[in-house]
Length: 179
Image (cartoon, rainbow, N blue to C red; front, side):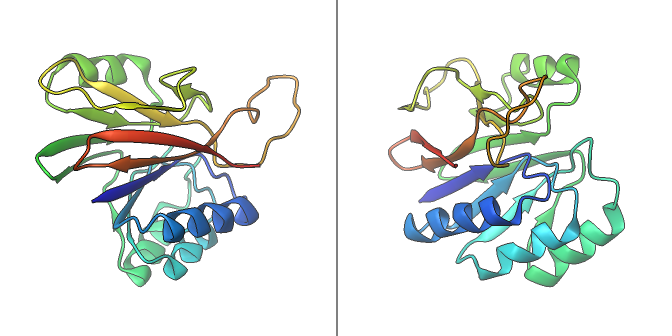
């Protein structure tokens, strides 16, 4: 089965639509969003996706009630600040990544095969376009970077990102750039 991963879309409807096109083309069954939708309308875009949206809240998600309503309207699942998901014998943790201390504890717990996170707008693992989910070893962190379009800024916060496709049966992942 295939999963899609996205994070930190920050109101960028155009890139969300591009990501949805990728997820539909890849025939993913679930998409995990690691937070920072910002605007509930972003969640509503996922209704044209042929997969179920599962997400957590990020530090820029102030409209929590409206985000929850949007998730319910599209048949998605908003798990709050921290979520868990199991599929094909894989246990997945979902956390935006706002606190590096909490993220470290989740990784060190050994509870998950991999953790989906965002927040940094940087890909994890860095420098790899594809890889394998290890069996019975340390927890892998998968961060797609930002789902927002690339924008030059002094902080360099919107320069690295895209989506990740995970094949849960083969235990492989692939990073796909967004513009």
